[in-house]
Image (tube, helix red, strand yellow):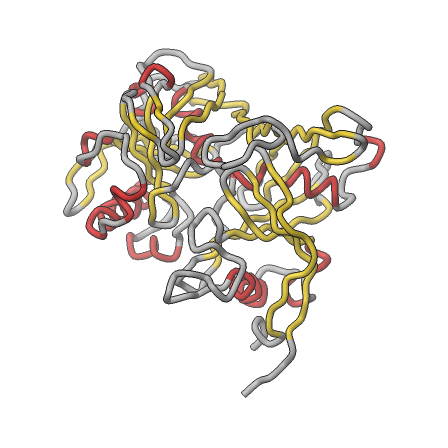
Length: 394
């Protein structure tokens, strides 16, 4: 039996938006983990505490939810006119794999602050007081993200009075711009349609808007699957049959979007696509007990991440919502009342969120220059994370 001592790796534990993750500088990783591959994945799995059949991640940094089972690797940018390369790994809780297929929009808000603190942004670009603009290359989807980080007395300002539903305490506001948010290099609508008939065996044929923006997302109408759009986590996450139906929708939608060739491949691609359901505005009480009135929102959205209903809204899914809302005729746009829109406020399980996007048609194809939202971020802990020395070798 191996008894190698633990090794320690410099790391920062950060909250970004409604997510938390362990952040690393690429140069600080053990040499074998500085390149993509099995060693890197094993290291990150061990850091987070996966795979865990108990689904608690007790022996790691993960928090046993999709929002807290996340890792980020940052490096000096390889791209012109960018400050930092940002690579996101969604760590499975109960299975031995790390999904590199998409971005985390929430943690994107923390990347700029980390880059400034790590010296990746030139000192002459950081004001004594004001805002520092950080240009980020999102390496998973090969897109640019721009964050506007508040600076006070030459340092990143983390405290403030900006409130974000889904986050308990206020903090400093960070504006995040997702440039050209169509995911990857494909079309915003991979099927060529704003609305498709999606056949899902055992569920039926559903109207669906399938969009590549922020993250590949499948939108269906809440009423078509027996919901009203006001559901909280307990209504769905405790229902194995409901979760199985959503996974079937996700898998068959992924095939139709061209992301996988067969539904059997969906199990190894849990992070993307997302599946969400939309409804017209209605009154409900959020998970914190806060009342959300129909007049406060344009529509209701509930989204699943890594097989469970999300407690708030994934940042990348919010980009998809904003983009789809800006395009007349999508299910998201219709749930919001239809017509031309440059911004939308939607209700989610923890409250509300506003996201802006401007869409236009060029030669018959829809294009979106950027989507914008406000988030916040904060360092929770910094120092070293420790893992057994043999946990990423062999």
